[in-house]
Image (tube, rainbow, N blue to C red; front, side, top):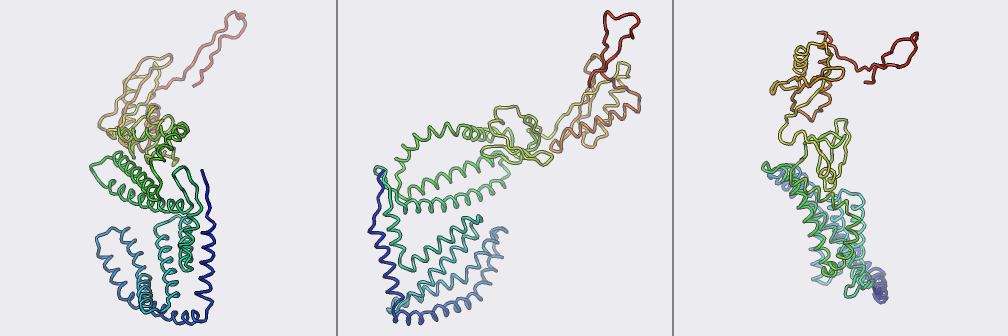
Length: 445
């Protein structure tokens, strides 16, 4: 690595600034010419305002009659407000062209053109860039470039920045190269994200694609356009991509170990999208997390529970762990509720009451019909099971099970069906005759 600084470029920059001050401002002739150019700037402004009053309503009517959607019409309406500054900019450009043709000075007109162009760039940035930090950075950059251009220091400044460089073998990287690369990368990434967002919205409106396929195509296209933007920006500033490929191959091995989990989640996310095991809107359960899939990301699956909490489950867990998808193929879900009854109970009557209790719930389907079965004999009770179907698992499964069990308990009390408590007999061996008899301890439920 060999850093280099060209001091002559810096001194040339200072000489250009000083020369501009003495040649453009600190002379009596230029002061008079400046006073003569100000009315021309004002006159072109009034002319642009007069033309704007006729052109702007026509542009708005044209936008309203267009077949664009509401968002496009809103953006076009905002852009229509640039008619006045663009007309003024056109008038100033014509005035500067006439002055140059006849040999008149036009330094004030040129200053007005630079300031007006900077204002247009800043206004466009305020619409396109929502981030206040980036919008402020664009504003400062636009005014700085305009000021340097006014002072005839833009080219000398670029020469100074280009003189501050570092050499890596045959690759020379200067401050100007880095700034150009950052600017082109930012612009290309913004364009890439804009195009990918438009494509994703169009794909979501296609009825032939499932939600999983829509997400997969959108993410693949976004990754592709971002990669193209990075490659084009690097090639645009003159960086040899083959050298980067060799360097990145060595660094990539080390980074790969550090990003092993990230890459694993990324690949797992692609697998989930390709096999279409889950999709946005599905009701799933992973471990103790139950809810519906709100979004599929490159690193995680977002699951929103019924209490409003959103869990971010890594894609690797979705692939490697057991996942219960309640709505994978259809909306029908069968639930089970176990109920114990006493050995003295009328079992057929209990089965009938359990079926009737399920029918009382509005969420339980009549077809397939609820069924009650006897599973077997236990230590202290006869085990029964109620099976019923629902089609709205996204509204919860535990709440409807609780509702059915409460109705079952109510009917059992009304018809005298006893639900036994588990109990155990404890005998004390070798006790005296006059001691109290054996006592009974209820087992915990």
